[in-house]
Length: 518
Image (cartoon, rainbow, N blue to C red; front, top):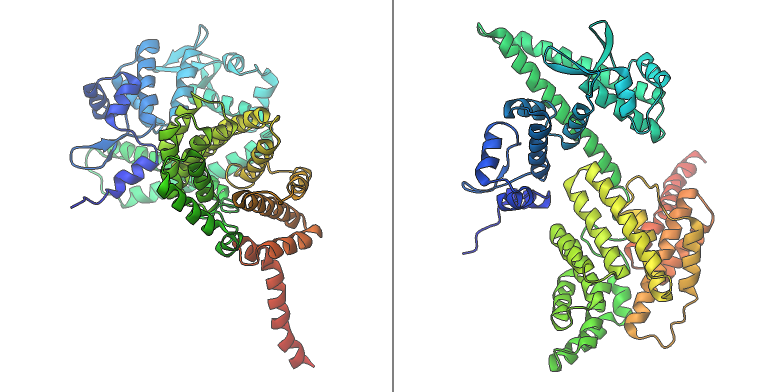
């Protein structure tokens, strides 16, 4: 009897968790060393998938490297390093920032009570590019950081130094000190509420003779809880915003939202799939027929069969770039994100095909979305943007491929990979593509070519409609009618008809009221 899959293990794998073997391979650390680090509190606890096995957070690899760095560069004990890691909630970026700050403590810094402090000039020199003293004075005037007086000199803790670097990076990105001041006021107000809750908790808590130690531990727990929950809430809010337009073109079930099954049947897709299957029943290694069948399954969003046929094509022709792209896309839409990324990475070592680059960029973003980490999502989007830029450049001398890449780029930026809608296509770009696809003649095209062209026209028409509707432009009405005339049974036709349906319902609701009034 087949054992049911452990849901905890499945969730951990989706979030990028690693086996102990993978951690050992990536860090070179021994198994006993990793277990000892966990015992000392240097690493967060893994996700237990059974009594004898566990999966480790992706950050484990970076944390082990940071342990080595603190030992080699600052001769810290494991207990001292564990204290830093726990204070910073095992946040790799924050810990890396502290390491960087410690590396900057050149002559001129000093120790007080075992803690290193930096002078204002040291902090300013560490910024990239270095800032002026007047800027730091403005930060101090806003109350964003608090200096200390040590040995008669102004000094800053390593935490304050990291905060200054964060503010400087934000200013370089366009955030004003006034905006930071408002954020600081919100955070401070929330912190005061948390302190009030802590005091209330302590008032109801029964302490023993060792009361102060218990209070210290209690404060540490509440502090860490607040830090982790605040981070989780910020990430959750960002990721929720990133989901708003996710299903514009590919639905929650990973199926193309259009055209409708009725449209595809009318265009002859089912008949063409049956014809190809009958042909392959007699000649199973006909590469041209297999490639056409893969294209047909792609048009129908049949990712399971597309995955199988792509593998069969690659078995016969290992260098088939179309099958490489199809296989990567099918793995992504089947939810096998790590496998999709690894597979496409392997393919890109053998080919620079633009469509393979495109699918690799999409796979990176899809995997990052599953991790619910805004930092990783944004890193993936940056990589995707570079890959898409290369794909556009590499396809310029192939008109049909160039159109396909540009269409994918524009639709992707509207839905999958631009959570803040910062790189949405312009109306001019969409109108240009709309005109290009409208000018292509259908006569002489095979069945799959006609269906592919019809789908491209619908995609670009709907994309243009979405943009025009957001603007409140009168062209939106005509574009909606065009969608309805092409595929009156499609999901997107229903979506585009919603504004009209609402107005009709509102008019019907208002009619009885007018009759009563008369």
